[in-house]
Image (cartoon, rainbow, N blue to C red):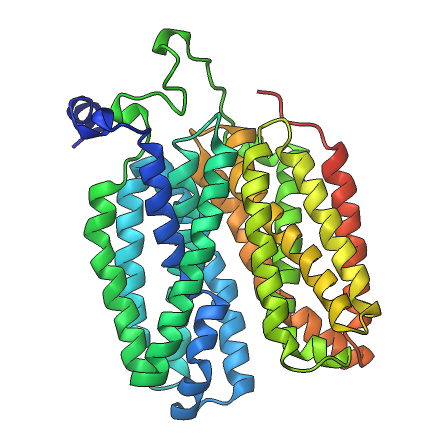
Length: 417
């Protein structure tokens, strides 16, 4: 069905008759889709890593190398995913990526050695962490304009609960049934989600005869939206400030969450404090998600990034001075607030700054940068510690980088639309 015929069909359909703006349905689908990226993310793979390595003829060092290659190669999937979104729409791309990810997870559950694990891990990382993340963000960005920040704040909150629930469920399944059966269950769940995604997802409000988040305005009075191409977006300083800010945060976050216990032990804190710190991180992140969602308008979204990066710099500067659990809680609170703000800003900035027409390509390019940063984050921390004997020097260096990016975000001009 081409765009014209599908538009004519949907204008007579049920999206217009709902008592709420249909974009909020897309927010629900997008949060479920982003939760479905779990098998392609480090914390999802971490749930099966030890059980898998105990069975396969692969040691920890080789697995770390396979994981790094899988992450770097998988990051490239973000670019074609962005192009597909802009060409065939969010709905068709979401279904395609979900099917590909489900099949890849099922194939990985049958891995028998380093070769098959590497191949399937590239696919799981690529379709999960990279491609499906881009589609999830675009599913909201293509629908919202005025309330994009609020929509992304709600999305981030739903996503937090989605990840918590899925991690607990997968962890329990691995414990009870083994990693292969649990991983197969993830694959079949992804495939079962496909018809739901097809039924509920809609590409754009225009395809449903609606206005983009401007339902109270008559179509003839709606403002004209000037959209940037990918090339034009790449030529703006704002793109690089947001992309580098999101990348720097993901680099730090992937490292400190993976080595959270090790870092706290180095500061002389008990192992039990690691769980408490993660709880503080999550709680403060939720608070920041909601608050930032309210204020993340087009004119403020990059300024909020400056606040988030400043909080990240403060958290990292505090870390080397931690001597008590209370000090660790302060560090965790600052890190959680930073994460909540940067997450919402990163989700909302692209649509606010560059419009909706080429949003898939723009978000795909940005996602490539952040996935690469996430992949090297743990390596940066552990290699630096091996050289210096402590996490302190690299943490201070990262704090300085975050401070520079905070200043850049504070003064960078917004793209002219």
